[in-house]
Length: 288
Image (cartoon, helix red, strand yellow):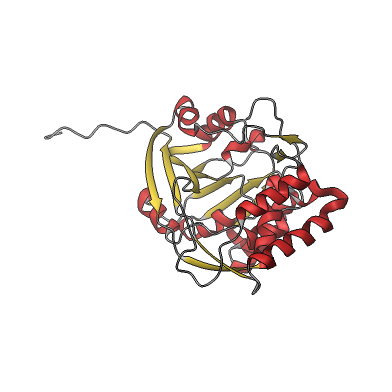
């Protein structure tokens, strides 16, 4: 967790209704890559820590016999339940409102634990150690995120690019230059260094996989507005009584950037790190 910042329950307050529409999807083929890396038998248990509206867990649902998602935000848990019902997998999914720091919370043991761009919000040393104890022998912790090192452009696509820099400036004009996070701020952003944390907890690895993105997407004004309001640093409640003014200016900015109300962009690639609960066993010697 970031020094000088404490988690509070307003971090993602009000964002859940915008999350599924606004957030860019993971690269297609993620489930296939993890199937190859983990070799699940379809009967194991998956724990999604910081599950949000269930995006990642539901994409991986065909690989497991049971899914448990944990998130502290009431709205996220409700959205996850609705999404599971829409996909017809509510019979094998369970959504628990709890902080990661409250694990194991009587949830039992799991074959795989996954963190989809959520680990940085937690007391990482505590959570990593706890999750390792919750994994069965041979189990894995999987860290999933957008690939941060790639450059994506809308060059060659039919509509203008989303004006992210102008949106960022508008958010700063309303909320100030320091990134907001719940009731606090993150002057230095969220922490990195996950590898050191997981190694300290006793995990072995990682095995790194990149699922290629780059597929063209078309987005409308409403999609981009949903993206803005899905982010912790521009959650709806942060604007207080100026929220309607902000949205009006945001929509004006978007219409100026694209009079048609359509934008083009490309899916990000997805970076996956697989960490194993147990040390890698040495290869057997010939003749043994």
